[in-house]
Amino acid sequence: MVVNPVSAGGQTARRWPRIRTALREAGIEIHSHLTVSRGDATAVTREEITLRRVRRVVAVGGDGTLNEVVNGCFDERGVPLARSLTVGLIPSGTGSDFRRTLSLPTDPHAAAHLLAGGTTRTIDLGRIVFADGSQRLFTNVADCGLGGEVVTRINRSRHKRAGLLGSAVFLGVSMTELMSFRNRDVLLTIDGVTSRARVQQVVVANGRCFGGGMRIAPTADPADGLLDVVVVGDISRFGALRAVPRLFRGTHLSLPAVSSHRVRSIGIAVAEGESPPRFDVDGEQVGSAPAEITVLPQALRFAVPALVC
Image (cartoon, rainbow, N blue to C red; front, top):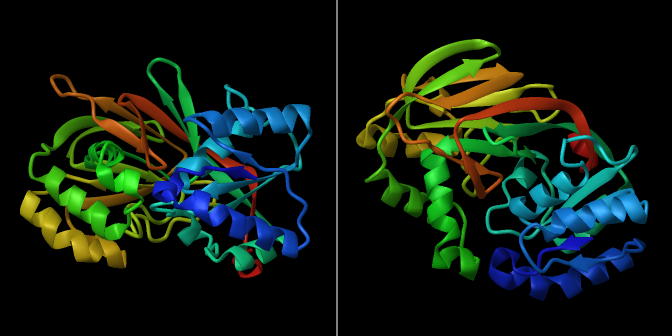
């Protein structure tokens, strides 16, 4: 169990004793580690897999904690460290969007019974590689443009520290950022075909939701061997505001300014004269364009409810 005690504004530290009790009551023998810094979850996961030959790793936290754990299941080149490895998640974060796609329970006892049941599904992952050669795997979403700026602002805010994030706070920060955000020209290379587009944001999704429940990619399937790309084009501020209710319902894909694609790879580059848009990767700001994103089909076995299989 890789526990991020500061996730959800520190609430995970207070929830952990109850979660630990629920796991033991479900008959699960655990070894736990409470993370102490950014990147610690990745480091300890790699160590447990390679040295202790652990084959079941569960993240206790939000999407960022899960992201670090998943990256710890692979080496720096993205090569799996072990076969027959299962990853699980007990959601306890400020957004926890990936759990919505897999219908993961938030109640500790329900989560413990899910893990004890041993039902799994093999899912895809996304891999993003930046111009300097650094890379990151992701389970849920890589998003550049407005979303990257919103996440940067949120991660610096008092809301993040207080664990107050959710769709309402995310929406409020998005509205604030939207007032000063300028759409940009980018070069998109989708499965080898390059085009130029003026965009508000480009969302590359393995899961269906971001921003605390916004259904950005409502038909995404994390086990179909493809990534869903949602391109929000040169939409006005007023048009973006009008589209918000549709974003929560997942009906925005029919808007003229929005296009969607199912892809194996997408490159996002900066057009000449434009500033590089920032990337949000599973709720963390980790880099800027240019970047290349590819799908890793059937890359990870994940603990899920039986009805999701």
